[in-house]
Image 1 (spheres, rainbow, N blue to C red):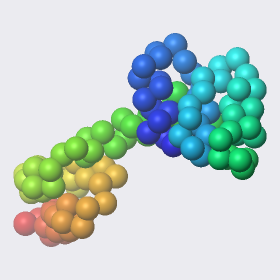
Image 2 (cartoon, rainbow, N blue to C red):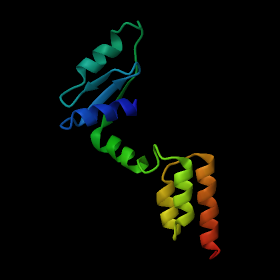
Image 3 (cartoon, rainbow, N blue to C red):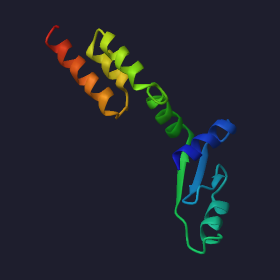
Length: 117
């Protein structure tokens, strides 16, 4: 759902608040969420949908936090990690990446930096 909200924020720069229903329908709710609630209750699925509200600042910050690793090849990140001079640099390159090979490379580099190798 957050990806849907992010797309809305990217297309509508003045929008600050988006509601996304569990079927993926997004609603700009800067001035009220009546449309989102109506869709959640009256839809073609015949059941009430959940609605999650997202704020621009939260979504865009989350995107910025993970942007350094999203879309990067693991091999490229591992190469950067191996060249890092500080633990902080390794952590910045790793970001929120959870790929096993990238995490393992980061852990190995951090251990090497701690040991002075």
